[in-house]
Image 1 (cartoon, rainbow, N blue to C red):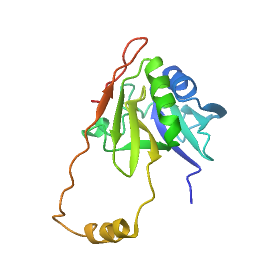
Image 2 (image 1 turned 120 degrees about the horizontal axis):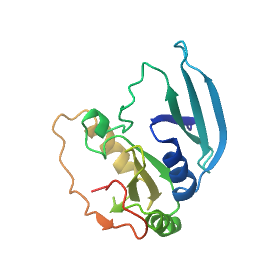
Image 3 (image 1 turned 120 degrees about the vertical axis):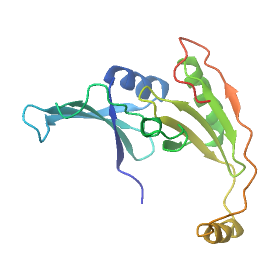
Image 4 (image 1 turned 60 degrees about the vertical axis):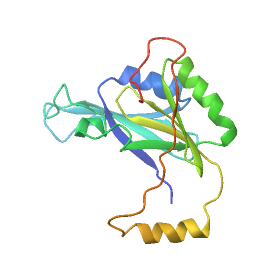
Length: 180
């Protein structure tokens, strides 16, 4: 079962809107404005069509309980490396180069990683959230599924070799948050 939508907070609606419409190519399809559960508070909830039978949404919050300087980054805001919590969108293998160059043309650095079973490109959105386009390189095997069940409960699993990332710096505008 797929997601209907995933929602995050934003401190900069204009930058978020530009990123998700221009750099990602998503369409803004709905904005809900409503009071919050706190007197005088209100919020905007922006919904973008991801083109894959799902939506990504962002909250613009106006509520005195929310600190003005909150960090919307879902990993670094909690003291984790940027790559831990992230959002991955499906792409076909032939789309990756076009999507990578679109990000670079919009001023975003891109990290590319061949994970062997899939290839991914990554950048960081204006909220500090790592965003990924991921293309399957091949189907997963029965052996990989069996190993997954064996490894999930192993407190000291054998480690695989880390992939070698390729860094593609931004081509235009000022560089945004780095993915390195």
